[in-house]
Length: 261
Image 1 (cartoon, rainbow, N blue to C red):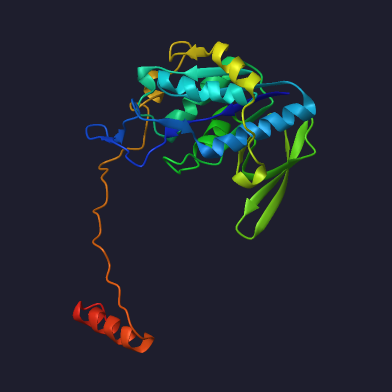
Image 2 (tube, rainbow, N blue to C red; image 1 turned 90 degrees about the vertical axis):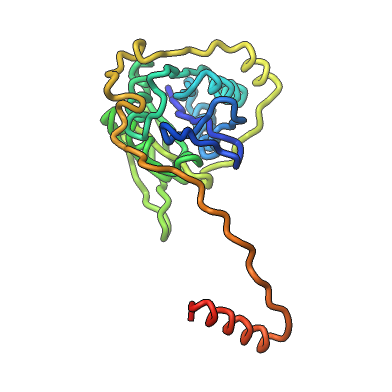
């Protein structure tokens, strides 16, 4: 079983800076982590490998500093890592990102299963996983909370919904996006950390992937951000103290004075 796990390195800070010219996040020089939902994707790949054998290839698209996220994934137990890095990839929206990752997966060759976290915490679109599946023309099961009866031919997935779950049978190759209820991510072992330090990270550029330059990065992104800004800081609220009836009257009076009621 050959599994590819697509991860993303996201800012580990609330002090996010925005490039005013491109309206995109400034990622260089910012402390980063593996997108939390992607850690569940890594764990699920490891569990499947323990059951069926095979190999796990972890992949990300990003600047050179994203290599640290890949090494962390290797420390957890992934076998190989691929970094898609090129200045032409910068500023990609979800469509261009899906295209680039799909090109990276095609570069690897035949793959049985692709696993992604349900969404990234810096964008919250939940579009890249399904976008990759569409680009590769393979089945996709989103919001997967459990994988059962998996073998070299297919699997059964329990897809979480607001009212319960759907039970979906899918052939392989396929792509799933996972939610945090699917498992509990493990911690890296000492041996894993040692392997991660000396691991060779494969790097691919746009030319290596034979990408259409009009389909990648900001040039290939149909989504246009007109303006991005931080919301104004609200003033402190007012606390009314005293007996419930008195505070209710004070609150009502305050709201009436402000024309709210």
